Image 1 (cartoon, rainbow, N blue to C red):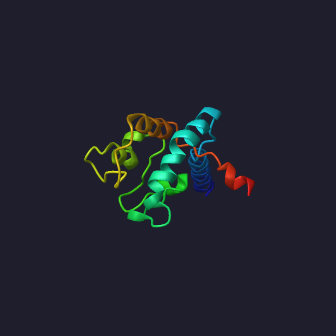
Image 2 (image 1 turned 30 degrees about the horizontal axis):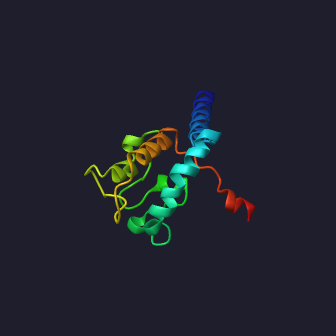
Image 3 (image 1 turned 90 degrees about the horizontal axis):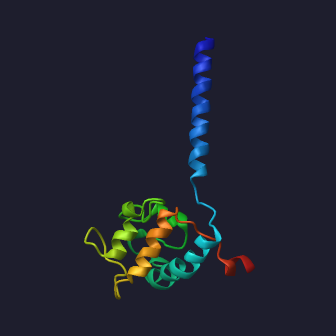
Length: 137
């Protein structure tokens, strides 16, 4: 009986370690450089360009107003895979590489500089700094 109890205790300990590791891989705390990149290159595109369709209307079931919403994704799956830009549907959409939807739908293709910024942001884990305007209210 103690062998079974020890086995169950070990299984519970392993489950706890896996759970803690999964939580630790959540949203990273952005460095100053990452916050600057997000606030100058990422947030403006998400809210000013993508937001026309993906804030209130949620076209394709996708919201873009939080990291969690992007990770959850929409009808086509997760929009971003933190740490893996090549697995992120958002990157394929803004590249317009023919593997999915072309974004932005209405308007010119984003600049290569902007696409590169999104690649770096996702590769860095897609850190999402708090919105200073919302914090002050």
